[in-house]
Image (cartoon, rainbow, N blue to C red):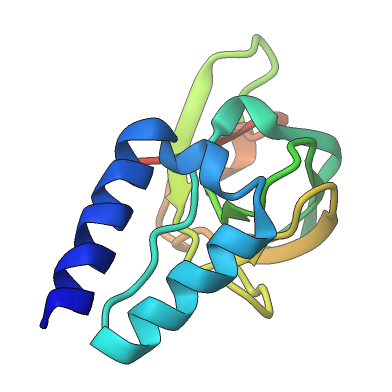
Length: 150
């Protein structure tokens, strides 16, 4: 019982000393916290640092009719593993006016894991189908893309 109390005090002190973004930079601490969470059936929270995410390249193309394909390369520039972000996709017309906004959640992304490793790049391919009855489909001329944490 005393061991658990000491362990809890240690973990609380560690949390006060380091923010959760900084914890990811220390693999030994991260591994220890994962072991503790497995024992107590808790889930460790991955750091979320939008400023460390860089969209290196992207494309948005019509496949057929109202079906489109979004492809992008997302890089984690930090030293810590990060949670997968959501994507804000804005479809624009020829004058850069927004025609449609869509948020693609991290759960919707077809990724193998729920994290982006430190320094790693992730290639994402995502399909998007607009309703056939949507009147503005012909106005889509471009797109804007932003990775963010909700």
